[in-house]
Length: 353
Image (cartoon, rainbow, N blue to C red; front, side):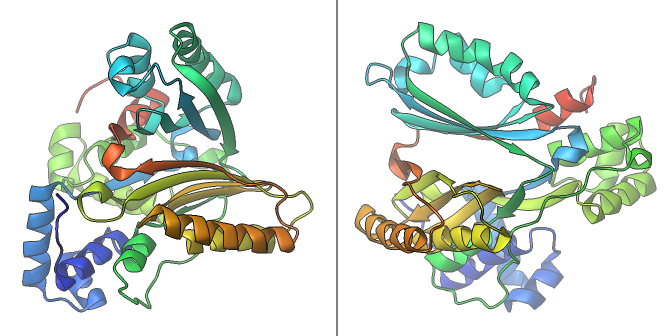
């Protein structure tokens, strides 16, 4: 049974997605809802486990070179109940470099952080080989997004605005462009690494609580928090459990773009997929785009998809249909979103905090 949100609760949900790092006072000022309503809504959201706020590290922060999206179609004889107890499935989902995973009986989409393509292959190929030996996989596709050339957009606020027809005028900016590599004198110290890990593992803890866990002084924790967010090594994002409140479908897509395009053409493709459904996230690099969006039903998805693809084809931007994985929200069997194990592994954090 889906949860019903009041009009003010929808505004608060939008505010948390749009301004995930704001205090209740600042949030009230920006969305026009009083602080008591924000407090009550946040408490209700916690009880429902509807939304969690994450501190997401950049590739530079952890020394990662690429993000890889993995699309898998499973054989009919290998539904989730068959796969879930296998050692290879646990190695896949529990691998620290796997930061997100969504699966149904027939499909899954995962994302990985890796130091290099070689690192990805060494970690992941043995797991895939085991899946093939067990007869699980019908088809698998990999798409690599080097952080140095890839833009990224976290679109949860756009999804809330679109799904609930809020008509907000303070929508987030467009995709974040690729960041230049860290200068040599900006490399993280051991204390930097530990505090970065603490921020990712415990995104809701205060500086005082993190000081107690890490043994690093509270002023140092506070200073590093400001530094990491200002430098883009960390970003604050909202993760919403969409199954609980709305929609029928979540779709993941990968869209190749014709060679010879410019950045404005890439943005046209991004805007087209925003019109197909309520966007959740997007990764873009020259030649391709990968992301996810929500839809209220298949007929709407089909008509909007056909229209936008026809327009993109007419403009000469694409010459094929996207890879599209449509997952009914009610049929999602497994989800994961967790950056902390990856940060610990990539930065060599050898202690629990």
